[in-house]
Length: 204
Image (cartoon, rainbow, N blue to C red; front, top):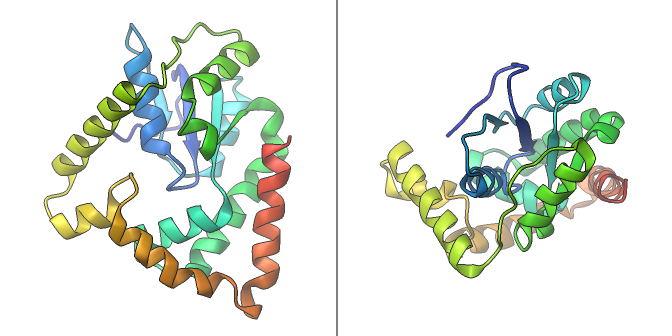
């Protein structure tokens, strides 16, 4: 599933901070195409985005609201919430000066009308990628593919539940319990910065 190297041969780069619908985006994009495409994805490295922009490649930058992305990634990677927050800020602070060479794809749009994101790529980069028809039938098919890939990569069922790139009841409960950690006085300024970055990027 992971396809990441600093190569100029990609047809498109689709990437963002972890837990920002990266897997869904790539699966949906690839399934929508009638011919094979080479997609750079899942680097979660802002320098990969910058590389794509500097080499005039189509780049779709994924972004999710800070609290949701940070909590989801902290659970996925089993790391402290503050560390995930710092990584979010670093990622989007680094990418921000290069937004003119990207199509910004907010999580809410990706997960409800991914075809719109592909249309924006085609318009900005004069490409002819096939769009994704965001029906329940098609999204269910993508989720099934994602589940199959997860089961191939991971045999521990507890870890599958922790890392599955779709919402789960157990993770929702964990996110609720961790949410208070993001709203302590110690992290107030960092959260303000993360939210400011998010707003500036999605309105760019």
